[in-house]
Length: 248
Image 1 (tube, rainbow, N blue to C red):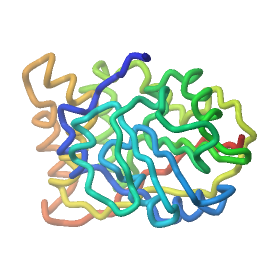
Image 2 (tube, one colour):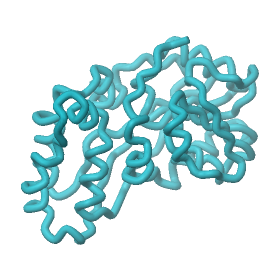
Image 3 (cartoon, rainbow, N blue to C red):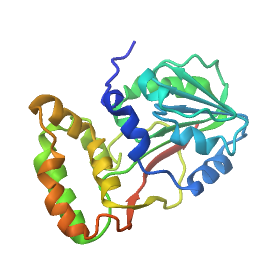
Image 4 (cartoon, helix red, strand yellow):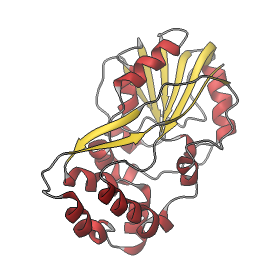
């Protein structure tokens, strides 16, 4: 069994509450690229965000995660089955799935084992799609505060695998016939409390709290509030998506 790098179970409820949602166009494009729409397997589903989007296009979705606590935060969705299991070792049979997805999690996997498993469970012509997003785009003053928080305050507490996200997965091996996805991004209209909640879900924020016994958000609450304006003000925030997509 591969080692499970559990960076999110402790804040599973906040993860479900504060993470941005993926655009509907992502799931439409994945369905169109798939050879059929019988079964999609969403690996490291977390609280089921990707699974919910896939369920609108596929007859059945298997959503798996190695964290039972994360799955406890996932809602019941018609057509979606949840299982506690790692991405590198699925209970799916051979050639069972049309699509395999990994949203914001490929950097935690044992890639060789996962790729072998994806090849095993995908039907001929099946699609593997993984994506990530890094720092948000917003007002430049807000970006500056978040950037200092990311790099300077909690920077030393990021797991080493985070560098793969910063590079947009460009350096990862991906042994599948490449497909070109459209340009897509996450968008959210958030107030100040929602942004702070999101920053608190970062794995580096959690490690900071665990190791130092203090909340790093206290260090940026004032400068972020000054840059934000009225705390109830809704601001548009954007996260461009970076993809690895291929066909078996």
